[in-house]
Length: 107
Image (cartoon, rainbow, N blue to C red; front, side, top):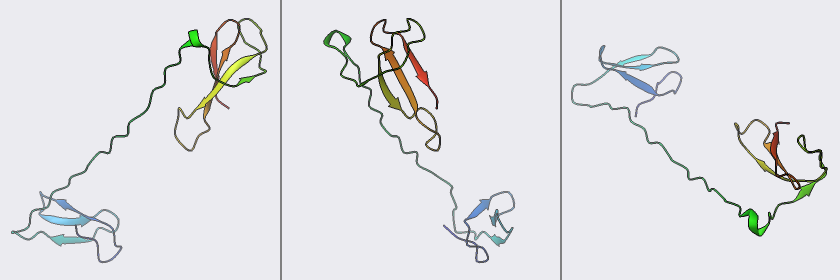
């Protein structure tokens, strides 16, 4: 890797013009004949854990007083999941204790 002597950003190869070029300040440097420049990267995969809940054994989730939009019962299970980017608030999910209807809140 080579860095720009002016602004310290990464110099990237331009193989058609045979130069290393800074994308920030347009500094250019010749590529030597004996040097091979390759751009490569590695993708880090993260594993996500999926939890299945057996409703026949009962839900082991906290409850809250909130009105079900389907049956108007006032008690529901709730849980929170980060479904969007980290800089946005998490999504709250609800499941009615009585009719088992599920809905979410994006506050």
